[in-house]
View 1 (spheres, one colour):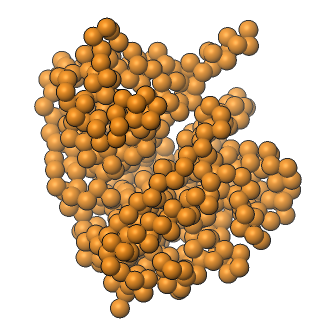
View 2 (cartoon, rainbow, N blue to C red):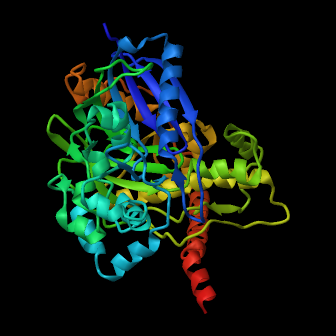
Length: 509
């Protein structure tokens, strides 16, 4: 009898496969990284085949670790990097272009043009999103306009667009040869700038605004239910249901058991993503947050407010790969802890612009406050502090939008292992940080949804009982010190706003 749920967590830098028992125990897991491509400043791409192959390698390794055979898998859940855009040929499965990653900024000018035309309010009202290159719609249009003949082919129905979940479902279900379904879930659809947040369907006016043919779009459905059945390969048995799908941040929120209005979670990954449950109706933000779908289970839709920090763990990777300050990402904590403070050094890691609540694609990164006494340790500590300070901007926005205190935040993701970061986060935000025993809550959320969709769990509440808090961090920093950090941060952020636009103006003159 099948006895495990497979969760595929397809992330920005790698793919994770997690096998979970129906009692919530992790039976095995594995991760496989894949190459990143940066063809121009501000451009980020992935090869779709690398994405798919990395998931297959991770699944095989996780099964070996757990000692499970394909027949032992009862259901499959998928969670994924959102907004990343793939377009492929329906007849062959061949990608039309590399995937354009959520971090990519190439369509900033297109977004500005639409904003100058007065479209920002309309986009926000219909989709809950801001006009920003982050989202999928302008990426789709860019590919269709740049690849010769692509737009005409899309209008004829020859091409398929998908966020990564849609692409993986199509591949796992056998692709064109098996007439695989072209589907997505409501959470990923809500991140395209093309879905109406109230009707939960593709919006013709948004498709016209962004010049995206509706023929290229997948079918939208809820997060728990039958999406497709696996075609079968060495890792996955034919007929295994793919029964749970959600974007990574929604899956993490579900996996953290944030099922009540006001529950907050933050995931520390490549970026940092905060989400707060706002209940059964969409709530517009007045402070730079996004309105999005949290999940839809059993016909019941939960909405959320979300803040997205583009560069969090990626700042640590930059110290490692770009500057050579550390050899491994895990080394940053010891280096940062070797000094008592950042000694006035402030790092604004706007390496891909600034996300919420600033939404400034023209911002650029900077390290300020350097002196002759500054060392790599001060920069390392300033990097961890920068992650927490960016997250604190989101906490402040949520407090304003909810007009209510936020006293607790649940955390997950790789950087949540960092003790120094978690304590500084608690100190700078003035809230209790709760860290679970199992940090892979994104994959866990996908497994929980798949279990519900396959009938292994009866409800979200039943699945959410698996969440278990292991560590709590409480504020300890004196108020004067906290205020000093916040003032230095505000000054530094102000200094980096609009740098790219000013540089462009100077070049033009």
